[in-house]
Image (tube, rainbow, N blue to C red; front, side):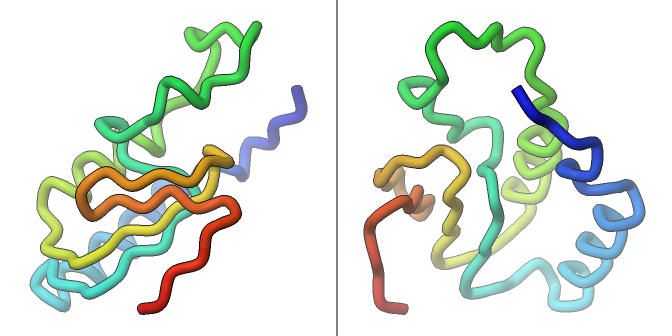
Length: 99
């Protein structure tokens, strides 16, 4: 499967993100990310036949740390190509939600 190293945020991007969140005391209304924190990964959306031990989960693990510190109202992501909601976490593929 195609994968490019720059699909994962660099340490520089992570530091910049954390600095910006710190500047607002870790309080935001909405979070928009491609993927989700590790604790919310929808295993039912895993691609069949893909060895999950070969998948780089570093971004999801980092987002876990972000989510643990963050006070937010809604988090939206789309990587998993499903429509699902878990608490404040919104997985969006075809759905549309008003903010």
